[in-house]
Amino acid sequence: MQKVLLGVEAIAQGAIDGGMSGVYAYPGTPSTEITEYIQHSKYAKEKKIHSQWSANEKTAMEAALGMAYAGKRAMTCMKHVGLNVAADNFMNAAVTGVNGGMLVTVADDPSMHSSQNEQDSRYYGRFAQIPILEPSNQQEAYDMAYYGFQLSEQFGVPVMLRVTTRMAHSRAIVNLKETLPENEIKLPTNPSQFVLLPVNARKQYKKLLASQVNFEKASDESSFNQYFDGKDKSIGVIACGIAYNYLMEHFPEGCPFPVVKVSQYPLPRKKITRLSEETESILVLEEGYPIFEELLKGYLEKEKVKGRLDGTLPRDGELNPDLVAKALKLPVKYGLDIPKEVSNRPPALCVGCGHHDVYRALNEAVATFGEGRVFSDIGCYTLGALEPYRAINTCVDMGASITMAKGAADAGLVPALAVIGDSTFTHSGITGLIDAVAEKSPITIIISDNESTSMTGGQESAAKGIIEKVCLAVGVEAEHLHVINPVKKNHDEMVTLIKTELAYQGVSVIVPRRICVQKNRRDIKIRKAQVE
Image (tube, rainbow, N blue to C red; front, side, top):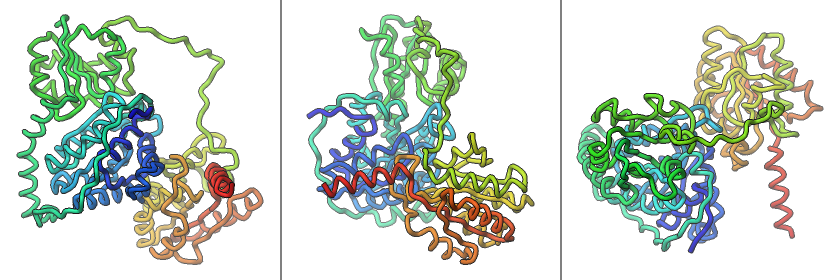
């Protein structure tokens, strides 16, 4: 059977067919569609494969590890910066190992299409010392998800599956395999495996270190890693993941240079040693950081290895066929120049979005205090940094708005104000609120609630219906907790409310609540379809 699938959809289908019992994730571009595909899969629904969204990436990874503890196959999905949130569990899961298969699927975003940085998750995989899979096409994305559970169970460790934006969001025909049955529940045979007291952790870590030689052997023997000989030995090419596609676009009849295609890590040492011995120089093509170029410079002749570090390829941004051609001194075909009359169109809040009304009121309320005191967060409302509002001064990482406002207030910048969304609040804003309440920090927090994780497509927010309860539970005083409908007719009321709470020398929370206009439209369509 064949299907035309996005790379992320191929991963989802491969995991379903590979006998997965649950996926755990927090939405983040370009990884979101993996979980959404599973949520909409008829087979997954019939088999009751878990696919509900988690509050954040840390809780997602911990739940997946719990399912793997019970002997089932589980996958957790996130974008690259989400792995930072889950890093504590990720690193320790490599030490505990797993009982059932566990895939950690991470979607990196080189060129920062919708992200704060270009972080390369392969560093985390290498840091944790676990096998990494990186597909070069959609068929491999499917096969790796299918095979990754087996690899995880073979070695008893989590396996990272790393993709990048172009692979995630491009389509191809994928050949499907036989659907495997789910594992039965089976508890670990080693009762101390998951109890990381030092006495146990030391044993588990020695076991992980001893497995490295087996990981490398598996990589050398993997069908995902291949050596292609070539007649022109002046240069050899190491092409990792999707970079192999960029290379082969120039050589549909076959590359004249020897090539080592790498899609499973650790690096296949035997193949790379052969490449080094047979060629005069080596060009490393890898999407993201020059992690393996740097590694190769450590045990090969430094000048022999070319790539991002020596300027043969750009140090930042995505690779593409033109950059590969330039590095190989091939003709580069450039497209037409963009006419000067055509300018980039910056992103903007949707027409009718409640954030518009929040920022109008916010700007008016803080005008008398001067600029530089509004700390924001990650979500649709981050667009308040652009025209016409220019209402916010920071956006660093999920949940940082509240804690940065607290720190600024501690420094004497009073009043300080935080803007955070409903989903981001439950993701990682609650702990910052606890700190602020504990010290009675003079900050005002606006939790702009559109009842949705809207930036990534309108997924259900874990915050729905609980924000006020959470605020009261952690100690926000009831008289300084307010809910208001952000519409034009309430503008003056919002301005007055914000000004009043800015004058309060303690923690106050204002919750402007209006459903996301896009989600509202989708919900109406769904209700109409159900009636019909």
